[in-house]
Length: 122
Image (cartoon, rainbow, N blue to C red; front, side, top):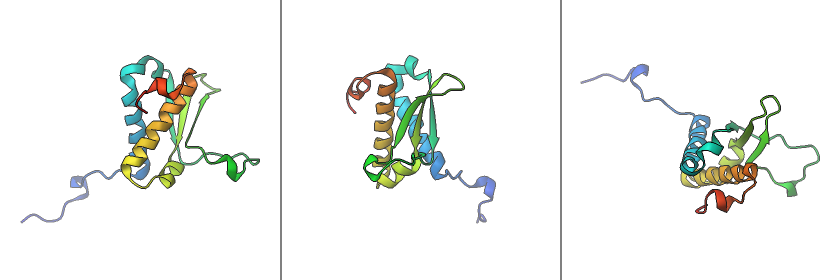
């Protein structure tokens, strides 16, 4: 009979933040067959929560994502906010779909397109 597993033998545990990063990467991969050239110019970043401007009200809502052009590099980037997405969703499939929809919307915004053009299925 074998004894308990040593830490080196245990499966690698993924943190919630790492699992969320995986969802963002999977969303980008789903778009690559059609938009690989455009996506190669965009950095995808995960942050825990958005910075809410002091003048914001409850009616403004909390964003799931934002797109911007980084001042330092001039590269476009899309930021997906982990905590608002996790709070809004109740199961893994719903979370993955909200991440995907957020990525599609922000890619569309950066490209000056409608989300339906980026992914007609979304």
